Length: 571
Image (cartoon, rainbow, N blue to C red; front, side, top):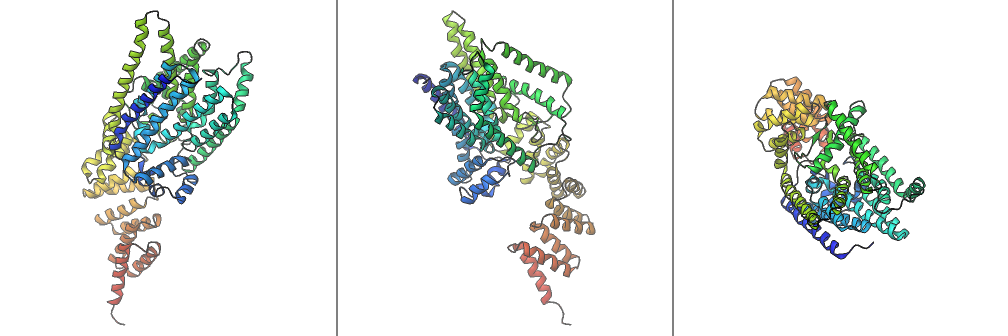
């Protein structure tokens, strides 16, 4: 059904307010938390839109997932704005505002119910749980893939309304684009089946199973796309060693975390407090009471929604929307070491909003009092105002890297990502003494973290605590034997401690493990010269020069070695 113009005008207003709210981020910087992987340290992306970049986007799995359209969107931003972070933030803000608009239009088209549709869209636009997806440049994949998700919903609504095959084809094509932005859209065909039940009411009561089978059959190309994207994602993630093995993280611990995470997401949706950029996985620390209680909550909601499916079908549809769309990232296939992530709620939260919006409408519709019915929009306005204020405050956390990490550590003092990020920043800023406690906390929480050990080594080395520096550099190379930078710094530290033989061995390992490590090559050659092993120094210098002919420092050392030749006494 064609939506009336007044709700559309209000929806446009909500979308503009959402965009204006997030335009605060144009004054924000990039952060060191993964923005380098996607933009600032990614040479192909920084070069802008080039043919080589396009080929790279479609053939790489460097981000741990196949997401060519996301990389292309970053390339386009670099083409337009360079490394001006404000332009990148503005693009994400626009995508989020458009997503809000498209969600509202799709719901209006499917249901014809203005109030609940507008409220669901407005909550989507203004909820603080979505700040991470919008204000974090590295999460462009969220807002971009959801743009295609929302467009698929609208095209599918037109297909259900007109049964013109071009709309079904359009929905399938747009879904394919969404999968190329982020594979989380693999559950989209299931969402469309839920919408067939309500509000589209395409499931006939006389033979529901046969009807569902036919509706699933019409979406067969979508299910094939989803299956292909799932397989590609698993292959790429395993190739990048992004997934945990079942030996490292047993299935029982994954299930326990998944059950409790489902409940925690609901809690964060209803009461968005204590938000973090990283929620550490609890491993085996969850109490039996919490796991059992969470299981009972999930079963209780499921049973209640199922028993009310005829009177209030939006409850079971909204609930299954939430459960199904969150399933790919709930941790059964564990990627990373997080228990949950706010960005994962970007699409699933819509299901919870659907349940609340339509339930509130039905509850207030039963009152005869006009005053009570008028209270509903007032209550909705108050809720949206509170959400907007919370979103504004949460957004400020993403202003820059130090603000982000300090806020995380303030909210959770032993947070490994917050401590690690802040410690690295302070080392880069040469605030070594200040950095040490944060890096030590990160090491305590993440025992197998070579980068934290390496930077602890740098901090102690610069403070001339050479014994402590040696300890941390050795820990770094024990965790990662190919850590060339750590081997090089270990060589410098051992030399300061007078351990000449060990120092030489460390420089040699640095060159072996990092053939392109210019500093290690120069240090090795200089150290051989210092030890009087001139022939060995010449051989090492020649090898390094063949690999790095443009190295000025290396060329200076070679020139010095040649000067030794010219000063050699005649036989």
